[in-house]
Image 1 (cartoon, rainbow, N blue to C red):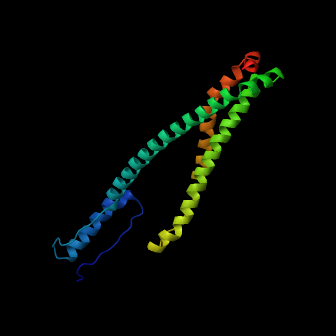
Image 2 (cartoon, rainbow, N blue to C red):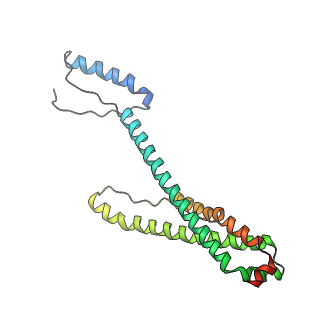
Image 3 (spheres, rainbow, N blue to C red):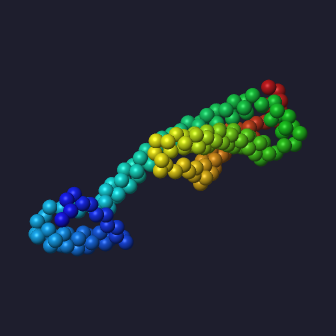
Length: 187
């Protein structure tokens, strides 16, 4: 009889775990002459708790990221409002030359999306450089470490970044489009 032996048994699905545990328990009780000197662990409940913990952590990180996006969006909006107030004369000249409110609105929306897109590109680029730079260091301490850059996450981050510029740039762009040409040129 083996002392301190461990056996790892993998089932085809979590639903089979209880049945398999009962079968293994009856076999071990029979082989140990009715002595219950063994222990069975089912990692399904452990994995469920692990997934719950990861879900809570994802929600917390998502909440913090949402706050950061809101602050960044307000920053973009403030920058664009300053840009509109500093370029009132330019807007007046464009309107006097026949630019439609839609064209002026589009100009400022593109600028807001470019501003936030560049910020997003710097953030994504910095994250990729940090991930690729830390990979060899982590592999030194943990040889099984696999370094992966998630292109889907980077793409999503860029899309969200440009969308924040579009969303928070709308108010300054609409304000620029509403300016009166004559009043704007007088400033």
